[in-house]
Amino acid sequence: MTDRGDPRPLSVTEAIEGRRSIRAFRPEPVPRPMIERVLATAGRAPSGSNIQPWRVYVVTGARKAELEREMLAAFDRGAFGEDEYQYYPKPWREPYLERRRKAGWGLYSLLGITRDDKDGMARQLRRNFLFFDAPVGLIFSIDRDLPMGSWLDYGMFIQSVMLAARGLGLETCPQQAFSAYHAIIRRVLGIPQEEMVVCGMALGYADWSATVNRLVTEREPLDRFIMFL
Image 1: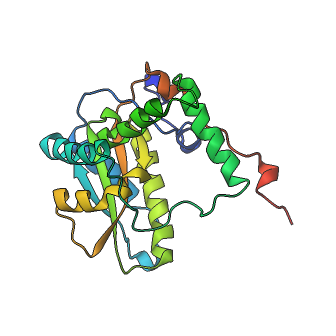
Image 2: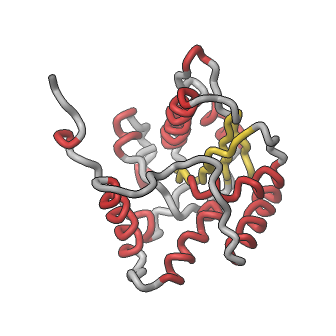
């Protein structure tokens, strides 16, 4: 489906160009066969020697609510954990720092959160751990001993999940924030120590009436990142 409920099927180009991080979802559940179809389609993503390094924990209902309670309790007492892997650059430098700031302030400005409103920023960050009210949460993990190539494959799989979801009228928000609570996630979901939590994802039907879903981040023009030789 196209954006905002148009039932016309999406082309591949439309699915990619219209994708955005959705931060408000409608409450209606997603049928299990639809979730399975999304993940089966994404499972066609390429991987070196076809090793398919991905593993997905699908959480709904009571188990999802339990996970949210545990993460929110930690967040509210200021216990923001440490990631098991480095996701962002350290230290930040240009041009990446400016792009990050532009995306962040684009979101906060849309929501009326000013630069000195630390409580407002914290409230918005907190919503990550409710999966932005989506009915389905996905937690992605990978075997801890797999090297960088498998992580590259994993990125293609996660992108495929998001595009396959759009093809069925669903939307998503990939959420690296979950990796900070990997210990809680591992305990609640029974994920073995041999697996590393990569990220989470909210999955459901977008609430297009929500202001936050109007955010569309900019992309660099072609001449900034390609070279014709």
